[in-house]
Figure 1 (cartoon, helix red, strand yellow):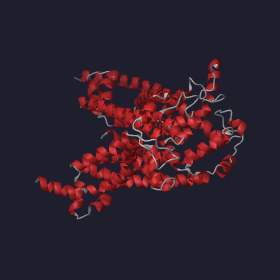
Figure 2 (cartoon, one colour):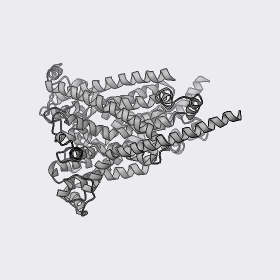
Figure 3 (cartoon, one colour):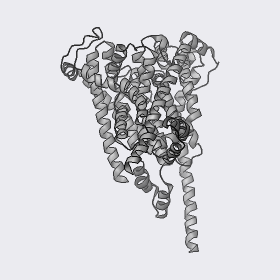
Figure 4 (cartoon, one colour):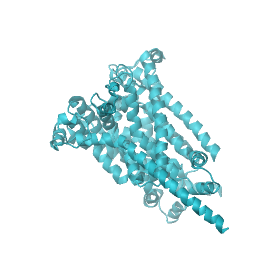
Length: 288
Length: 297
């Protein structure tokens, strides 16, 4: 018996050593290939502080002189301040009008065992598979007089993401024990109060993840503002930056500065919230 | 027992709470899709916005005889197949690597996921700089002695599509990785312990335990990759604008072209075809993969 277990230990430690060696090799490979992501980002960030000729060389060297005035120029001439405010407004309200209705619906769909649950689920799932029809949405907005308004873009963005949010939330809630809700009923809570005081805290992980993902999608969306904002004063950052690039495509330092401004807020949000993303994807998307 | 249980369910979880989401989604998303079925049968034009005339299937007849449309369908399929495959495979490889006990595991996960949070405008313009005539990619080719390959990759008819595909893969591989990582975390470690005791090799464990149990993650990734690939707009619009010539024009960008010319009826018919295309293929892919998931468990 004892020799047998000794053998196993010896075997295990040699396996352990081999595993460590493999890990080291894998680590080196993974780090090497991450350059494919790091190099373009470095070129962009460093390039945004260079002068026009230096930036056009597209190398990863830090700038010889740091031209912070690129940013000042871009913000004043490129109308970035206005675009930033537009982006904030559109993103904030589209996330709000997506997340509040979707989390209510997702919760009910997960809890109800009747037809209403399966039917609404099928209804919302259409949105996961079917692309939005831009042309008839344009027509609908024009007929209702909403075309070109913040409200239109906000609602279209919210509507297009409600299916994802419903999907994530309902998958998560299915794994939350029902006892919690019953306790609330005994306490005499109304269902809305129960939802906001008892269920929402339990759903916090999935709400955070989904909110972060929806925020990123709204912030980065290009197509909806392109189709439905006809005046440039309402353009969000991606659209403004695209247009700026069309005019200043020879001044890569300015273009890069513009890109950095667009990417920065969402990157900060990502770095801040990243630990929620994988855990939220586990409970909301993959388990389901 | 049953009726009272149902009553409790109804008071606790009123179906009316679904209504707000259903209204927003129904009005701004589903209603336009229904409208498309009607409007695609008209000669609807921006200059006669309120006077569309019924013309039957004329739009569809025109579209299917339009070589540009057929080319854009072909390009869309090429884009979707290549990006979906590359993103899934590379995402899986990355996830398997970063699921191991590497020292830089968390940093690498952060870096590989980062492109997924950037706007396609940022990614697209960045790619234009990288693959331009004096961009990094050509410099790299020059430094390893492959000068003869140097060219303007975006403006070249035979390579423009590859650049667009690269941009999409660059952006979304990390997202596929995250879904696979989430799937890997859900696998019970006891399976591996048991397999190790039985003396299973790493390769066998991957084939017999990891991959089958990752099926739900595969389904999500492949379905989303196919949908995203067929719907592709931003990548093409920003990087090539459909050119050079017509070599990278895809369905969504061709719809936009027709829309900007005021041809609302025709572009609605096109987007309806896109709708059927995406809905059909993603449903089929989903059905096949879901069946596999059931087989395993």
